[in-house]
Length: 152
Image (cartoon, rainbow, N blue to C red):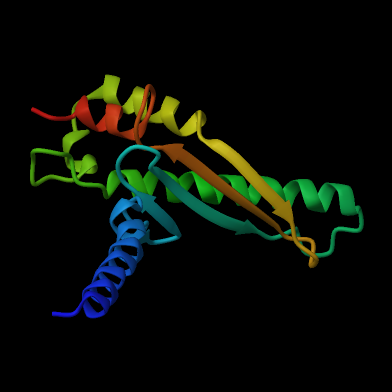
């Protein structure tokens, strides 16, 4: 094998390794869930969004915007709760909703977790409002910590 051919093959191998390395080092992709997305592991999150409509026929734009924001917030909180209840509990074949049956302390922790969700949002051009709620998956107060309390 000539020196030139060996150098070309070596350069091709280096380029291939550099092309593959970022794909291997990336965080796991977010999983689509109804109304949002879930990313597991460190830096992961559960995120849901909702759009609230202003009341029909309201002349006061300020009141209409506030009602739209409240509607979006209520819907986003219900969606976040539903998404959490459908998650599987690690180490079991049950969903969170099945493990909460007679655990009032766990239900209280779940309410507190939802109340601590990071809120972001925007007003849309038609007067409606979009609200996004995000919970961290890992770390202190994260979703994984809550799920760990439900394991047998």
